[in-house]
Length: 218
Image (cartoon, rainbow, N blue to C red; front, side):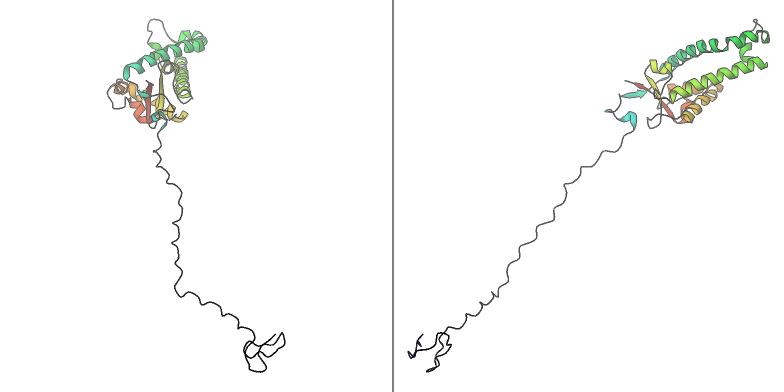
């Protein structure tokens, strides 16, 4: 290797010329200066939010939901009266078959001259018969009106059903309260039953006391 300035022959690994001191190898390139201007920072992307959930409709009570059940309306006085007659005939047939042996065994307890004696006599046999008839009616009305039918046979035939104020199925206890409330409806000259013809939601007195409605399918 020769010096580029004076031409002196040098060793291959010499860094400076031994004659003139000229460096034989270029100095290492200094690292480039960093750009004093700041690198622009891209704005952060907005966070991804889930799509908005549409507001849900308020829950509707059973009989108010048209998709779940058929449209219904309040049952008036005369429709309920016809259902009562049908139920009375059914209970009468069942009662005669159930209590005929008891009547026959206690035929001496009343006279045939006064047919109302069956309802007014205070003799023990007739009191027992009336009590059993009341229990039969109670079980009939309370069991069927609190069942999946929500109606007695008379009401079922006419498309009626008994519900609470929200349109739901009632319990046996509420159905029992409604049944015994009929006693009060009858004690005031039947006005409690007539209330079903002029109250806003066609409720009789015993319906109001028990918090019930009688509905009919349209």
